[in-house]
Amino acid sequence: MECTVTWTGAAGTRSHMGFVAETGSGHVITMDGAPDADKPANGGSNLAARPMETVLAGTGGCTAYDVVLILKRGRHDVRGCSVKLVTERAPVDPKVFTKIHMHFTVSGQGIPASAVERAIAMSHEKYCSASIMLGKTAEITTSFDLLEA
Figure: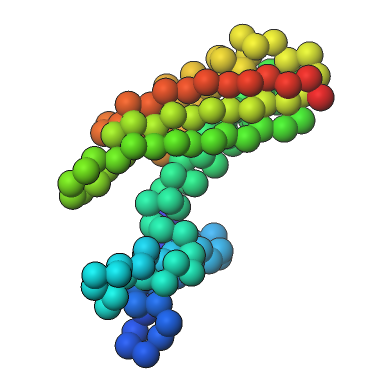
């Protein structure tokens, strides 16, 4: 796996802290910093997600992928899955995530709550590389709603 990240914020451009990530699979992700009122040359222009937001999004994608796959492999009729991640960060550099709560909403027909609970646990204990890495610095908690659809 590889990724190349290129700064796009050269002098004279709208965003001083813009970046483009080109993934090994041929996709592009844009990132930008938050505006800095005290030091405008150091801030971004709020034109894209923050780099740490992309870390969080990737983690959500990784774990939701696992949950859906585990449920499908268990022959459950899963029809939807989303996960909302809410974090707390350390107050000083490096402002690592210190707490992450993931709330899953899974929909389908006849899925037992125990199957969803098991899928989430398996993701966080065995399969989701991203959440397992982040678990080294952050306390990760989970919850879920199961909807009949």
